[in-house]
Image (cartoon, rainbow, N blue to C red; front, side, top):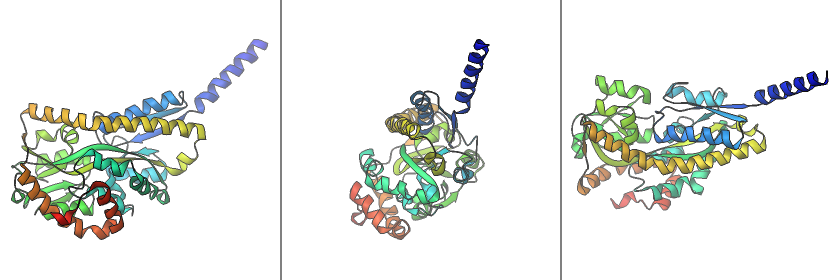
Length: 331
């Protein structure tokens, strides 16, 4: 009888332990072998280790859980707990200040970028998400963007009349128009087919996205312009996050801290590897603009900073300029 009682208690304890496990659905739109994809898996592993199995992070790559345009509302409703959307995605929520990251040639290097993302300006931006039911945890780098098309992109005139896929961002829309292009907003998962069928002529992406989405198969030319930045904010449903036990939340914060260091460390490495793979494919001609060609592109896009200043707020823009040293008036 005593043995039965002990066994029953043990089984009950196991059942309680299993039922107490917290599941975090982490959805994102890019491939698993991109910087963001690898960082998400790293976070999942660290979360399991640090919480001793109390938390299980389920990672859904390549829009396998929700489509690109559905993720944010799913997070706010609580049907998915964690996302890592690109920073342009917060404009439609009414937090337009994040679109300052989309301004062309804002950052020349990662040091200038991290002055924002790892400093008080970046923290203040994440805090603006809380009234929307969203808690911002970290910024993850992807890398600097380059343009691609089926014809060479060397001079500003080469962009005229071409349809370029962009994310939904008024700043990016103006960036393409500044060089005479035609901006086309569409979900990331639809880009390959759109390029293949000629719905759009080209796109802008960090090289890791360009390679893992196999865009090199349907784009003959890639110009290493490094004209813009693509990064992500790792976010969670605020009600879910605040409802976690304090010790669990602290362990997850540590896991996110380690994952962020990892994500930002591998971003440039992964883009360098992807560029080499694109070259080896022989399907896309890779071109490095001269200093004069890049400066001409920079000057052509400089008016975007003036036209879009009111959209993101002049105070926000000045904080970015102060941190990065960029001054569009000197171009």
